Length: 250
Ligand SMILES: [Zn+2]
Image (cartoon, rainbow, N blue to C red; front, side, top):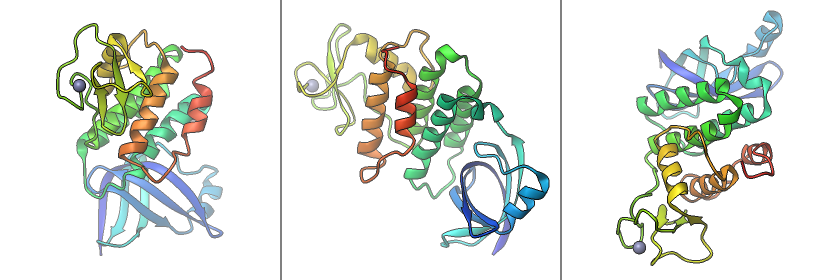
């Protein structure tokens, strides 16, 4: 067992027993790591604060290969992102980003994922209200891509043909992206040229200013995650995000 320090962001925190917590971090060096933080709730009540979920900083722990929970030694927060707690959609968006990483049990360092995840958290915490939905979608797709599951958008997943500029495709979550007009099936959602160009932007991690059909985009994302990352699970944070995306098609 050795004492390790690594850049990390706190994804989730559960109370354990009277005074302890189980803390799940995304670390830059070791992927997702669960730690047991004994006595940490007693310290919280003394300091009058609790550990900040979605904060990032330097995690110290005693680490041993192949055990479920490592021994937490401390977390020095560099950036706490309190703005996430001020708005349900910001909080729900951050929880969705974290859950995408948690359902895909990542066991190795992925610095690109770490970088994209922190960037997405910042944008969801501090982005302008009117771009918030697009920022959540962009952050989520960017994280999905960094995990190695980016969708195919420009070429048909069935026949491999590039889609024409005006062509209406269909999005096939299970097959991993867009089908051309010829291979499309009617029960699949339509993705025309505008939806495809917005998807290109979102997958590259950028939020289109004039995103149309945010709810439909959220459905595509959810279906894709369900098919490729979490087939046996439902995303617990999704209903909150869906409700906050609003009934109107913005
Ligand atoms: Zn095709």
